[in-house]
Image (cartoon, rainbow, N blue to C red):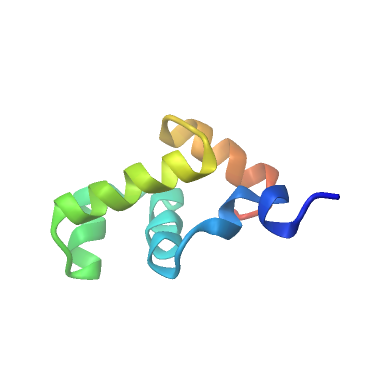
Length: 73
C-alpha cells in the first residue's frame, strides 16, 4: 500500500519550497521570486533545484505537467 507521501511527490516539499513552487507555477522568474520573498536569487535557485529533484522532474514544463496531474494548480 502506498503512503500519502509516495503517492504525491509534492507532499515531501518544505513549506518554503511550496511557496517557491507556487510562484514558479504562476510563471514567476527566479529574480521576481527573490524580490518578492526578500531572498537572494541564489537561494531561490537552490530551492528550485531541490524542488525539481524531489519531485523527479528536470524543467518547469515537466513540473507544471506533474502539478496538473496532482491538482496542485
